[in-house]
Length: 165
Image 1: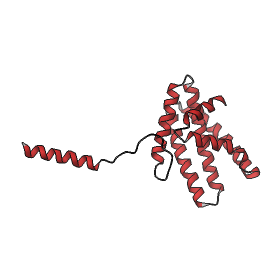
Image 2: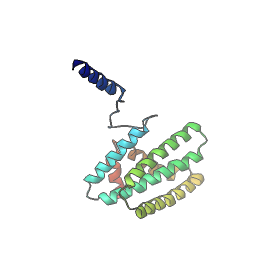
Image 3: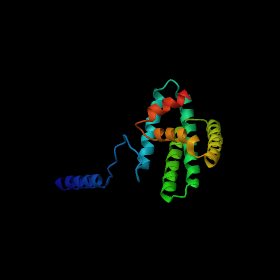
Image 4: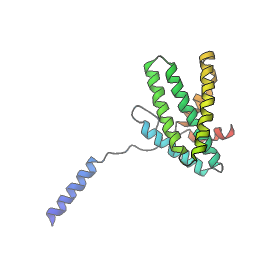
């Protein structure tokens, strides 16, 4: 009996050693390799804020539209820069915001999702045209909002600001 008990203990210990230790899911800020955890942190923070809010549906729709705008903006800016590192950062930000948008949009009807994404596409296309003509002055507020929404420590305030617009 003691032989089988020690064999079981060895197996359990082996399993515990091979199980990866998950990083803490709080206050993540995207650093190379941590974007998955940042996406989870931000998505969880936004969903918690939406569930606590009286304007839950409206807040979710505005958040989905804003994340769609952010993703499209980062994608557009990545094509405009000649700096390889900057392009890489924009693409990483685009992928992360697109994933957050996808997760937040799950409870919405497909038709509503498409409506929000179409509106975002139209507004970002107009902004990107002005970037070529006038510089980044027009997109600075959107980029600031995107940055705040992608930080789990600032997301609650950023969502409240979205509701006021």
